[in-house]
Image (cartoon, rainbow, N blue to C red; front, side, top):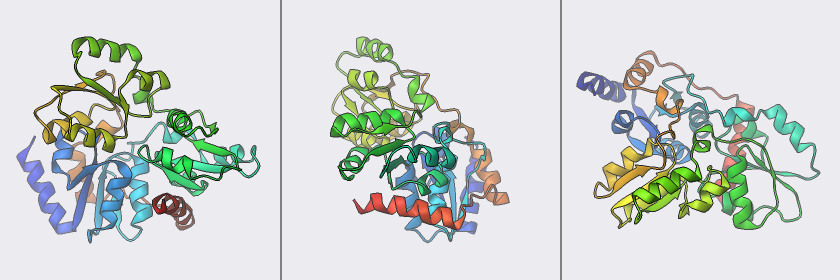
Length: 301
């Protein structure tokens, strides 16, 4: 890591009254310069509660949008405007509208890994941590449409017993994790527990000991007593786990679990973004209000 780069970023952070947020899947050196590291909604809420005027969001596009939805008065920067989310791109607001028209009285539960437009067309948002709780709270007499992640939706369906219509979206990174990967690592580390993200396929969740959100995995690891923990999500999370509980060996279920979009952001891009105050994330006010309503309904639970 370039000390000069880090020092320049630190100086600019002070000059701009900026806060730097890094998702748990970011490169280790990017996590290390952040004021907060966490999952997307947790980070946006923390930023909204500070007096920072500029939010530098080291994550992907929908995360920076969420920060703008919660903090419209702040300048939100995404250091690489090409850092998108394939799952979020798998449904548009037009497609959502067409799908809603199929089911009379439908309630739309929208995973936060989605665009502001799609959030605005939904009744309520959920995270991977609270999807089960949100689905349980929905009106039992009306159909539910869950977008965009079919696997998180399937997980919530199994946990709640509620029938839902699932949009066929998915996370390409979590799709790379297979049952055979878990079996191989269990053979190498027979005493280790296996934790995976609920964006994984049902058979992968069944092969693991726990299915947990990124925040849930971090909390699980903090109190874990074993020698090794096998982790089935994007490999960037291992950096934080190792920093916070170094006594444990953290093992990726597979080294293929890398999100190329999360890895687009570098220290050089963070510095450039702060110097140029670009790329800025904007959300149209009517869309922002609709998306905010869906987020607030979730937070009210």
